[in-house]
Image (cartoon, rainbow, N blue to C red; front, side, top):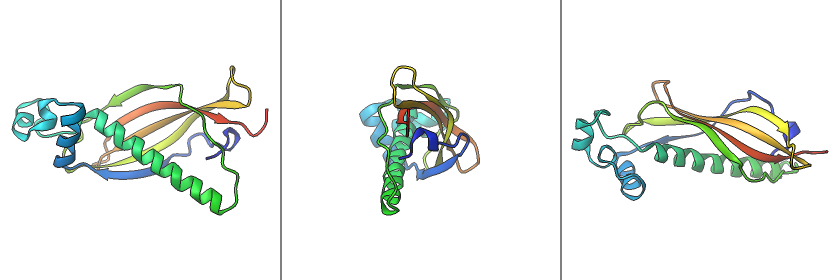
Length: 158
């Protein structure tokens, strides 16, 4: 991963895509969000969604998996080029989680990440705080998911 000084604000990039199937929507929902419109097509048809849709938590979990896979690819590429890899710290949290539109069975969501703020940490010398916006957009070009997350990122120098 990169150091705080290497972050380019506004440099949006795709981290991956995922197509949500009815089977996986039901499987996730049965374990983590067992609401009728996530579990049963007939119940979903009678709901305000009109058809089977994924849990928002399912959408968030897929985004997280794709972020981790993307980071692994980035680290491998940096190591192959002989570049130093910065070990990012923990996340102090997130805000503005939004599920803007339903994710229906058969939808393909493209997930992107964009740095929106990078600043030195006031409480941790040698570290910065990076804020990123992660979004998911369906095949119709509609944003269905958005979240702002923060992470501690090491600085090259203090």
